[in-house]
Amino acid sequence: MGHIALKKVTKSFGTTQVIPPLDLEINDGEFVVFVGPSGCGKSTLLRLIAGLEDVSGGTIEINGNDATSIPPAKRGLAMVFQSYALYPHMSVRKNIGFPLKMAGLDKAAADKKIEDAASVLNLTDYLERRPGQLSGGQRQRVAIGRAIVREPDAFLFDEPLSNLDAALRVNMRLEISELHNSLKTTMIYVTHDQVEAMTMADKIVVLRAGYIEQVGSPLELYRSPANLFVASFIGSPKMNFIEGKDAEAHGAHTIGVRPEHVSVSKTEGLWKGKVGVSEHLGSDTFLRVAVDGFEPMTIRADGEVDIYHGDTVYMSPDPTKIYKFDAAGQAL
Amino acid sequence: MARAVSTRRKLFVTLLAWSIGIAIFFPILWTFLTSFKTEAEAIASPPSLFFFDWTTENYAEVNSRSNYGLHFANSVIISLGSTLLGLLIAIPAAWSMAFVPGKRTKDILMWMLSTKMLPPVGVLIPIYLMFRDTGLLDSRLGLVIVLTLINLPIIVWMLYTYFKEIPVDILEAARMDGAALWSEIIYVLTPMAVPGIASTLLLNVILAWNEAFWTLNLTAAKAAPLTAFIASYSSPEGLFYAKLSAASTMAIAPILILGWFSQKQLVRGLTFGAVK
Image (cartoon, rainbow over all chains, first blue to last red; front, side):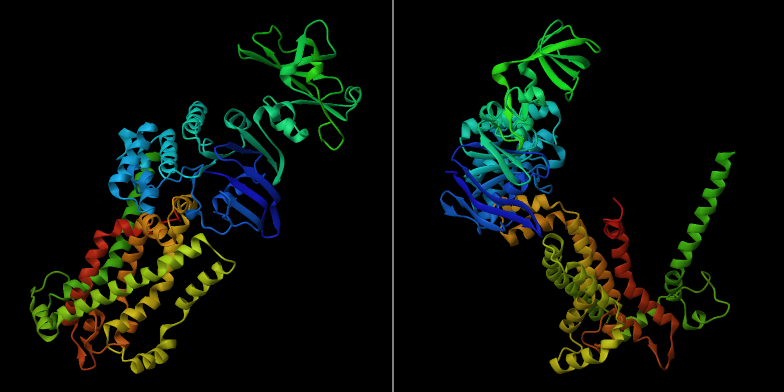
């Protein structure tokens, strides 16, 4: 069981309110990702759920029980920190076994659980090492091992991959997703990386300045962003926004077109522009195009396209995939 | 040419450093040498540095006149006792100041330090009277209490500095792992702070061992530590330099040896946080 409900939760540090009244429901077994730019309150929100910070108002319910004033140790949640936060003076075995020791489990049962976790996480050969003797990826696995042995109601991840290099990050992302598939435990994952959010989440919560901008599945957010902020935050490269008469033609203050929804041609199209930077990746080609009267547009074309810096190109948006926003930035 | 200048400079700095080192060490060396002289040679002028009739009669005399074992045991009990008691109080105090600071934490730390700026003699009479009325005069317990209080600000300050270096994430991880407050302090914080705690312990044992004001004023015979043992050889009837030196040598030798073997730990401890 791992059902978590936040009801009118607020958090202030001194006179600064970082979380205005906020309601959120996380269902059992869901993989929920909190995403937003730095300083949006996503980590604070996670720490409120963990109990590492006290709420300034509102209640937090875990499995239907009011957990607002229960200390972190008793909430039945496990957390993986950005810095791994391993105990440097303990071996891997003792690190993973620490929650079990705190729970008063006897040694034989604890050893069995530690070894099971180690074999799932490929740490069997490293059980007697200290964290200082491990690589970043191994340390991250130990941190995850420490979280899974206690069979928590929910896992909390606070930007767990941001200290890893790019290749390892992709691997660990897959491992965490596989872990979720096999454990089916609720996971709450904080990241500023929208790619991590899109690839891992069942449900994404987009936050800005403590406010929830939108909650939905990755593709819901991609297909129907509620406002300009979500539209620009979800999707990579980011959506192009156009104001003025092109927008008015669609009855909107601003229209948005994703880079992958624009076709590009050397001969004809709706908008004429000049290519600034062209990035040829083989699988895709990204073009940065300067268009008169617009912000520079980013275009993604499939495969290899024979367009380079300085070329003049014509672009046409897919008319079925134009996003419309009003003057307040809300989707129409 | 550059190399020649730098060699000369190195030679100069080396000589200077050695001179200062020897000058600082000289009183201890002189005491040590004097302890092997006769009383007549000890006050001879000009004094002889190494060439005199070496004798151990001062040590024999000092040993027969005083109970070195008792004073030594008192010193050990008082210095270790006050340090351990101090650590017991200071670890939780430093924990709360380092990890859950309040608005007044800095003020409290400064206030604690300010008590060290008060001349001890200023509170001698009230403390003496309190000790007299509670029967703590000339008791080991009394000295353990007073030295704990004297050194507590330093212990708290040192531990506070070490604890500040420990990433708070790790303590939070312990909380998430189900550790209650005391488990967090015992299983996570203390082991991680062991180097810092060890330096604090060493430094405070040394400070307490050498403390002479309170130990001399609050003891007579039973609880008198080695400081009182030395003082008993500087009497109004006249100074006996050789015997005084022998007593001093015997009193400082244990702590000097302890300091020698733990100097690496001490230096690391004292520069902790200052040099990263």
